[in-house]
Length: 365
Image (cartoon, rainbow, N blue to C red; front, side, top):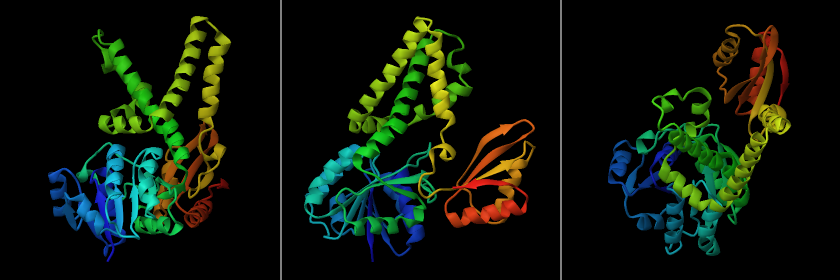
């Protein structure tokens, strides 16, 4: 019987445990955590079969080891594992938000011929802790795989174990991963936090202050509510990438600041025009679809209840949507609705259902 050891039973670790249990009820799951209350809850709720505070002893008998703590802890755990007599065929993986640091920490294990597969599920929640775990947390989310030197069989074994997550796998190098998440996740979190802090200081003497914050301000600063300890670890471990990207962002701010000071109207216009063009062209209809997502684009009338009619027809046919996006709606002119599915068969069934209801399919990807 396969034994899986999960070190760290927070949101991600507990959700992986639930997804594994759902898909593989015969797998024995052992949970390890430094918080006794977390282990008590995990065992009482049958999230795991057994719990331990002795990570090293449990690791020796494990067939799969999942490291689900912060990046700094993951690196420490890898150093510990490198000193142990693990099973020769053990598969070790992590869920850390940076990968170059983690893969470097895993090198001693790989040099011993042990399989380490870097991983990073791009999913989360505003909730945290073991009680926030959900088996469907990762459904249709991207899950980065960073195999490094791991054999293909180890990667396939990990994917089979995590089949219950229903994720979309993307294989990248450590450098590619850190650059992508740095620009699209780490830098925006720094920017959002800086804007909130600067606004708090700027309006500290105002009787209204942040009580007026709404709309655009709240939208672009939502991610500033993230866990400070987690982001401390992320930035310390992806510092070289983020500082470079942050400098490029600072240069952009300096350029628009200079244009405002110099009353350079053409430069100010060009600054916003370039951003609008790029932002308006985000999405698969312009940039192309990522693998494992399947889209329909259909004309939809500017009428009350039109979108609800589409979703109700798909639900009645038992077809599950991954995402829905309005690309364009103009008064008295049909707009375009993008509906995304997890596989080609579901997309094609949806096309048939909607065409029978006289919806015009513009194209499918």
